[in-house]
Length: 449
View (cartoon, rainbow, N blue to C red):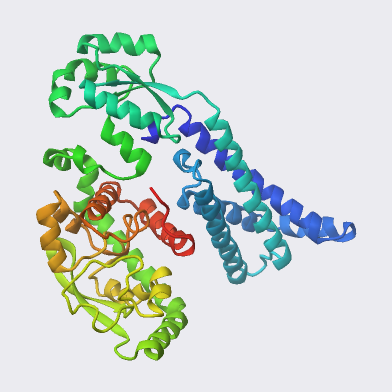
């Protein structure tokens, strides 16, 4: 969808160059503050004598900012989220610089200068984005002609006007005959035509819309607008044919991509097992002290293509939590033991599932695996629910970082919309972004939608 925004490409380029100059300015200011005038020039010359370090630092900043989606126009209006993304990216950048200076002899970046650089760069990144947010909100929205059945058009236009993040100003075109749409589009100066109705209306206007689409004015389904704005696929807008015709869902059978994500899963899982070992043993000890054995909890879950496996977790609920049978977990579940809320809040209880990842039963990122009893029930109540098992289940997932605990059927419908979006848009970028948002969710909670 970003390709349809007139300013999207220019904005990304501007942000990338602005971040680069912000980093250079941050390094210069750090030297200005850290060193007295007598040795400042010498220290600056020493840094410039290692151009490889400077290029690596700039490249790492760009890669981490890209992974944090700091160049995406739709993220700019979420001020708290921008703050978290910048801080996480800056922290990862500092770690990367420390590692490369440790690994490569001759490269040196003083600790004081590095900390000052990180703090200044973070501040400048936030300042740049807050300024752009103000600038974009003050701009006139781009006109978009909305066509289809009158009721559908009216509902869509009302909903779009209520979204401050939407860059389009909808124009009601429900009264137009299909042959009049191209002329009205030119007269209104519309940058896009949005089709608010379903397949039948599309077929009726097909020839005129196709001509318009290939003459330079994109024609987009309303469901795609909501997918761009909310990063989910509304269930009411989906049809069985759509899963076959949209090329994104073909990634399910992309062998090379699946093997690549498997390699990344194994490497990251091994690293995380080593890094998180002290936290795991401390958490396991707290569970043992507060509620006794068992420390680990084993449960049957449904994996890819319906295959069942045994999922491992640190126990966070009382031993008699399911005397009344299986129940959906809630955010403040009364069955949770004293230390359980803390473990679940920071996702520490999920750490044993790194072993499930190494065994090939799970991925780091994917739809959360559900219990067989719940799968059977939800498949009957929610259309396309079984489709979420087309990819490996994950320790974290796109639905988990966008929606809190699912307490009822409607919550599960909502989470499925995010899972289907993840399956369609599945990529290394979205994989890494989900991991990043998991860190954000653990620190500040899942953002409201």
